[in-house]
Length: 341
Ligand SMILES: NC(=O)c1ccc[n+]([C@@H]2O[C@H](COP(=O)([O-])OP(=O)(O)OC[C@H]3O[C@@H](n4cnc5c(N)ncnc54)[C@H](OP(=O)(O)O)[C@@H]3O)[C@@H](O)[C@H]2O)c1
Image (cartoon, rainbow, N blue to C red; front, side, top):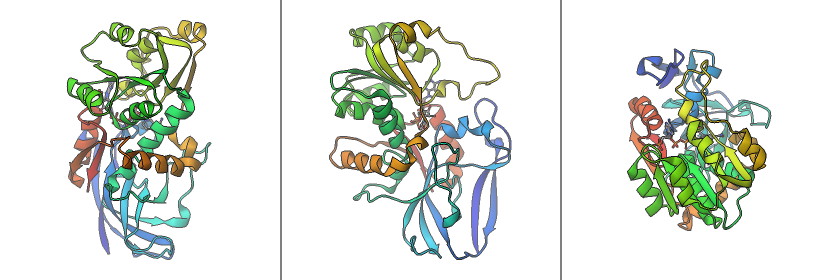
């Protein structure tokens, strides 16, 4: 018998999630049946969608998230002992997967379940499988390239520029020959994306006048905007878009802790959308489920060639998952926030 622990969300979050919204439950996993594998969790991802999907779920629910686990016992020939896999098994230290029961993503299903072997990372940390070479990297890759269709020489703006997705978007934009302007929440983050990631310019959105710094940094206007934060800053950026500009709406973290019954307000966007003939499109990364492996292969190649720097913010310990989650929401992370179990 294997003793397992998991986090259960017992109460809907109100504002910033509280530790008391979770229970840590200990339970015994039953012996494996044919077709099942036992996973020992190695790395767990803490992501903003754990907050924004909260109200979609009936409470209580097991806290979901992507994770990297290693097969410790196997009754499935495809996944022998020692295989590392990426799953959506969440905040737990052990779990059992019935391989045949994993429902694949489809474009029109909301299922987030997944099971695939961790790609060959050529000596890089397996944690990249839930970061730059996993869901956030894939969101950056397809969400930016497919929706913004960037061309060399164009000006790209990225919000959440020092985060898991934004930091990869900015670097991909540089690889594609664009001029990249980022907004992030501290001077330290601004320095990091400019000096180490090669952004052409970055600003601390908490201390600058967004409209005027953007006018100076992008005197010819903005062609592509990768939006991870929503809210007023996004509206201000969109008013500086060029004709036929493209906006990829990836997230709206500035409102995730807000009461959704109260409608947030932002400057009116229709004049910019209409007169600049903008294309604004939202996406969920599972849209490209059948093409995830293609993105992962390209991201790993860029990492191995030194063109993409995959920074991580590592918290250690199963007991610190909650702290890592709220810390990420509060902006403690540079790059991808992950927890080593
Ligand atoms: N559509 C999809 O399929 C998809 C997939 C992955 C992620 N996403 C979305 O992409 C966004 C970024 O996700 P991530 O995983 O890369 O997280 P992340 O950027 O690594 O971490 C979250 C960051 O959000 C910033 N933040 C927090 N409150 C904010 C506020 N009020 N205004 C502006 N920024 C704020 C903080 O950075 P600062 O210090 O800069 O404030 C924090 O570090 C989220 O909106 C997420 O939901 C969408």
